[in-house]
Length: 175
Image (tube, rainbow, N blue to C red; front, top):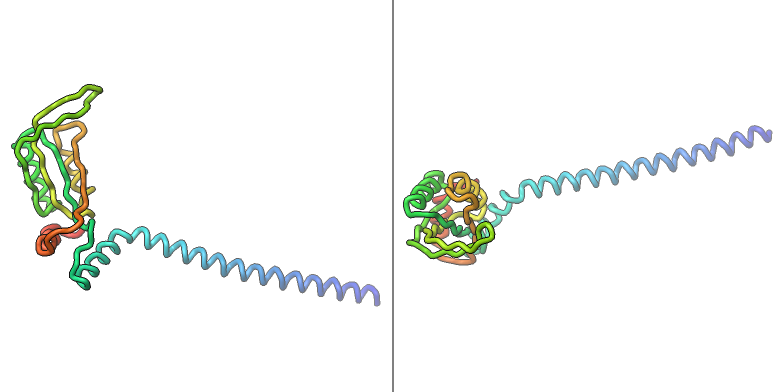
């Protein structure tokens, strides 16, 4: 009788222990699935952010009739002469990387190069594009620019003519 009672108690303990392990396993699997689902959602959101931002900007503009600051940018690019500026500007325009390029007459530039102060006469090019295309413009210009380290500085447009901004959107295809 003692042996049967001891077996019964041991069996009960074992059953309780198994129930507890099962409950823990179910809880862990639920936590694991929540963590995996959240991670997948965050990964998709981060990878789709540029497209979602563009869509959000367009919806904001349509619904409010206003401009979202920073959606367009102007790049400053210095070039050694007018012909090079015209060639690069035409090439950028043909690739539909910009809506417009202005080529300004000679500017006087001072800069450090290899530890020495240099001065030069250069041509300044203003490239007007979508902020999302700035990287493409810079990469392309660097690939054809005659300087070893060309200047390509980008500034976001904070506000401007709504009609002009709309024209820029139509002139530059989406990424």
